[in-house]
Image (cartoon, rainbow, N blue to C red; front, side):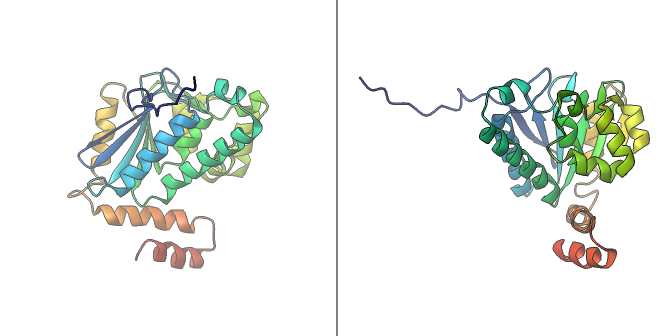
Length: 248
């Protein structure tokens, strides 16, 4: 007798991304502890959360973080990648890249709260944010993909070089070393380090300064988009294209 497959209910779908709005800040939490490694399913939910935050009029800042206190994210789920065919891997990576570009294209400020180790694809997610704040002594940061015989495939080669310069970025990626948040601060990869106690509350408070009535949130978003649009083209073209794309 044939069996008809029933669609999965919401209860059957694992919640891999938590979403809530707190005072104009959309808090988007990768939720697969301890390492918060991402699968295609998590990326779908993360992408949906980004779009939700983009479209909601009462959201002015997006705040990305990881569940637990050990990892922001350790990147792509290696077990999942080992179990799929090359075609799936290709489209998985394509979607991941599209998702991170969506963060950069969203005319709202994006902050990454690095609550723990931020390595591999986890750092690639963080680098797609506009501002990165780390929790003191919470872990290591870096792009160690070379140790697995692969390269950072979700924009890491491009975003890291734009943060630290070409030569230093190559050195960091070919050695595959991970390093402390303090070293990352000196290199310009992260913007600040907050104390462990009350970390998320303090990051949310920081994010709220970019929400009304503290700031003109549309101006904040348009500044972000102008910089993103004009970053890699000549200054005069960047000024015209960046400011025009931002509605100035």
